[in-house]
Image 1 (cartoon, one colour):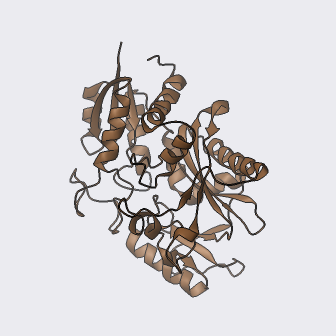
Image 2 (cartoon, one colour):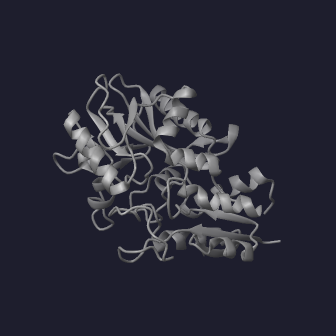
Length: 346
């Protein structure tokens, strides 16, 4: 019997304004749809999954519960980032669990933890996963006197480099104070103040589950590809302004040029973070080296970006291609990891 697959997604609106569903945005920020997918990505995922079943595209809007109940799929392929609130990435998995529908990717708790940068880092610390020092501040709260600067100041509950512009790298307590106040006003949430790590930065795509989870070839982020004078951050400008399909930045090096020992250290840190948060099927882990050259996990994204065009800088597909997986094979591999986890046969 052919699989019946629902793709749950949020599509970027053609123009800034209200989300297509008519729901209010989760914040008033200019970049509030940065996490949502382009139509080309949704179409590419649909095309890949048609290799293994019947595919229904279902937008993750206010009508999703009814549409999910009516569709009766064998499994949901979840790429929806959610609409509102700090737990928005967990909404579609929660609905799937309520109706007893299997779905790809991490569960409700993991997605909620991962989007809360403070809680994720607390888990990393508790589980011995190396991570940069951090504190969390609300507007008007002073930076602890012993917190070493510079630091990167970013919203606690955002992804896709939202709220991480050039000025997120702060060298003085006054810069931290101003950036925390900006985040409180624009994103209506506290700020994570994270000690800046001066070494090289990498991202690691992880595919699979439990003992079968594996790191795909490591991607290095090359800051020498940024405009002269730019901060050494893969932030909002680097991801969404300076890097275009027409003029892509040569910012990724994959496989990264690493010694065998450093590659193992980076992969181990990424896999430890993946398991510490209980990730399933796939995730992308951002890693940066400290002043001593040791690998530290910055954050983890259990719903990684998957732009299909090789001209676009999208880490997970780039790592997949380096591992010998074309785009369709990569998407099917994620589905197969979930099917195996549920014991569902194609």
